[in-house]
Amino acid sequence: MSDKVYNVLFLCTGNSARSIMAEALVSTMGNGRFRGFSAGSKPGGTVNPFAIEQIRQTGYPLDKLRSKSWDEFAAPEAPQMDFIITVCDNAAGEQCPYWPGHPVSAHWGFEDPAAATGTDEEKRAVFDKVYRQIRTRMNIFVNLPLHMLEKNAIQQEIRQIGETKV
Image (cartoon, rainbow, N blue to C red; front, side, top):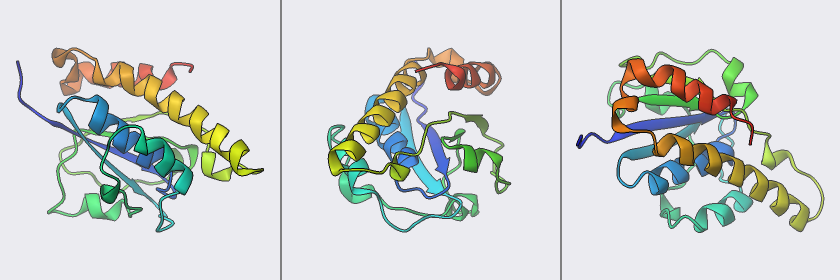
């Protein structure tokens, strides 16, 4: 059994909701096999309070949540990523920085819950829906057999997870 802990970076434009929820989910659902990170191309500087409500359920330390630029993870002293997953269409189409180690990359598109309008309850409903969609894909990802997590084997598998309709 491998003791390797895989670093996973989730990218989005604002790094306030989807990527942050994915960071918490991979870290908590991965049972020590995965360490989640998140960042944005144009981070808004704050974590959406409705995202925090969803993350609270995971037990992930809320003091770790921070909206940050993906530039932090392209720096030489940054942790080396094994996987980079974009979770919004904007980040998927943007020119990404060079990632040391050439991590496996994929796109899992989710609607932007931070763009939801209406009452707080209506916004919460959108956040809950997107959170459940991310959790469904994450459940597939974190339960892949260890031999599937090697770079050559995972490239196709991770893309198929992204294409799964939830």
